[in-house]
Image (cartoon, rainbow, N blue to C red):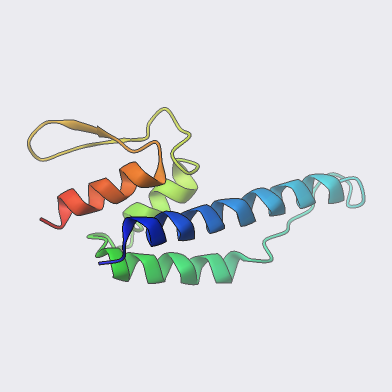
Length: 111
């Protein structure tokens, strides 16, 4: 399994790239009537996420509903959403507000 340090480093790289592209799109919207679509790194980011899914043993990798990592990155906006938690089988709630907490979830799931 990938180390926590490397996992967080990759997640932060994805987050930083997404933030740079969002800022670029904001600046470019003035030149494209307010509707620019820039996803220059989409394929690259998808490949990094696929790599992480395998390395972390994401139980939902390849699922038609998407992996836990994709859900956390895209749906929960890197854990910023108020819904950044998961209900565990034992009934406990685990917050996943940070990449570190997400890694801890995978450690728990891979016991």
